Amino acid sequence: MVVYLDYAASAPLRPEAAGAWAAAAVPGNPSSVHKAGRTARATIDAARQVIAHTFGADPAEVILTSGGTEADNLALGGIFQARQTGHARPHVAVSAVEHHAVLESAWLLQARAGAKVTVLPVGRDGIVQVEALEELLERHQDAVALCSIMGANNETGALQPVQAVTELAAAHGVPVHSDWVHLAGKVPLDFAATNLAAASVSSHKLGGPAGIGARLVRRDTPISAIAGGGGQERGVRSGTLDARAAAGFAAALQAPCVPASRLEQMLQPLDALVAGSGGQLVSRTPPRHVAGTRAFSVPGCDAEVLVYLLDAAGIAVGSGAACTAGVVGPSH
Image 1: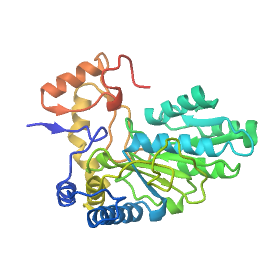
Image 2 (image 1 turned 180 degrees about the vertical axis):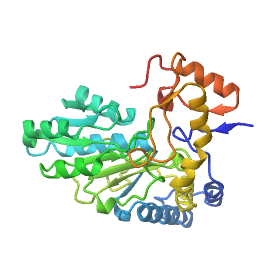
Image 3 (image 1 turned 90 degrees about the horizontal axis):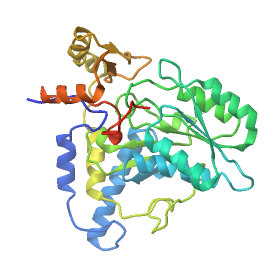
Image 4 (image 1 turned 135 degrees about the horizontal axis):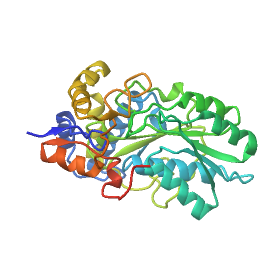
């Protein structure tokens, strides 16, 4: 028996998503005008409606992608490029605990497009220090292109002060992107009610198929395409869309969610295990941290060794983001 706890890396495929994927497995390019193509297009349109409804967005604001990483890259690169119109706005602000999809995208903008990246520090609780952003905005006024702050950290579960960041940035006319990959499915989200310019979500973190995600982009947000092609998604994202994956994503979003209180109850045995082994919880419970996420350390024990020992005992956990597995050194 395997106790699978590594949902932050990837959640098991929900039966509802698998069923929807199988039912949509028909031939047809959604850009084609024949019946098979129209059928695929209808599947994608229906999925887009579900995604939009789930996250409080308009269907026209949902740009389907290959996952959270592409959504993050397209948001940062597209907004940065569009914001250079008129006069240069080279400054980009990201928190120190962003997923690598955001951090590496920012560093690429610095290397290839002349961006000046400011990494906003976090406190011992893993929560970004908003005053650092305030200082940046006051110092550079209208030269800041955008800011990216995740909703909840994928390793610690720390909830970030996105509302405070967006209110501060809005006063300076700066668009804010938020990586919602670890937040989606855990708390109700309403894109329309936020001041966000863009947000990213991913299917496989929610029990849907891997290889599909979405970028929510407010209709009045200037954004440029950063890769060429057919411009299938609002002219800013190209590539043939996978109708089956879209159907599976939508089905996973419609499946019942486990209440936050139940998630916390389910993790009580893990908390007891950590305490009994002399470990220390790094993360905390709501409201400062998202439900269902635990980060802990065991003094004197190497993280990778602990992962292997637990795996041998039939317990699957992670020692950091899955995309950095095997990297020597502590998580950023």
